[in-house]
Image (cartoon, rainbow, N blue to C red; front, side, top):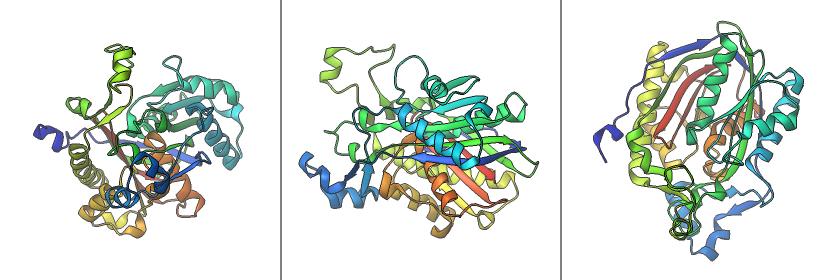
Amino acid sequence: MSEKLIETRHSRLCHLPGVRVISTGSYVPENIIRNEDLASLGYDADWIIQRTGIRERRHAPPEMATSDMAVIAAQRCLENSGRTADEVDLVVLGTFTADLPMPATACQIQDRLGITGPAFDLQAACAGFIYSLITGMQFVACGTSKLALLLGADTNSRVANPADKKTYPLFGDGAGAVLVEAGSKDQGLMAYTLGADGSGHDLLCIKMGGSAQPVNDSGVSDDLHFMHMDGRPVFKWAVRLIESTVHDVLKETNLGIADIDLMILHQANSRIIDAAAENLGISKEKLLINVDRYGNTSAASIPLALDEAHQEGRIHPGSRIILCGFGGGLSWGTALLVW
């Protein structure tokens, strides 16, 4: 792996104040897959815990698609806000496991909720929600949306290879949603950075199913329709990326790590979270960790954790929250959100 994939390509720091999150919502399937349940596939439960910190994850039943989970998360988000779907005028979904290659899954969500307004998907893998959050907030900040529904959802169990013992136990299914509208100048994203290093695109990818290699029998036989991940370089890149971009965002806002009330990192692997937290010097009391219960839910990871923190009363007006998503692309987004 080239050195540029190890060292973060620093992107420009931006600001997006005057937009507030008014509500959260989430959903995970009822079907719990514990480490012990994977024994029939030849997995060692203790090894999974030691290497990932994951004890269980949720898998959607065959009849459930990404849009189904996203609709439930959105409905809960609306219920928690006291708003109605006819007030929403924008839907943005971060996902890499769309229901169909075309049209956008956001269009199905829009239709089922009865929303009027544009709807589209963003594909930035595990950074998908951060990309959709920032995109939707920009619509609100410039006045082209009054109430935006922003989601992250993925059905990873459909694209993870059960025979890949290093990858399959990492992933689970889920969805999360937020509603955003105009707020005060002291609310919103006080600083954020979005970035990508496309030279690492093959470290985490699905090799078949696009225009470069349409689905074919030989590719299916070679498992090319499943997710492929080169875990070691991705792990090293993620740890350094978190530390680097969090420091960038804090420096831009003249804040230190002690000024942060809560940090929500993409729930990829507990070892990544632990290493990044140690490097940053942030106490575990300020972290929200649910990877042990849900695994890596990709684009759903951050909104799922954000909703959990909100429901637990860990977020209050004025709370300073670091959000950091990272994954395939290689893509990332780190932001300081003031509630």
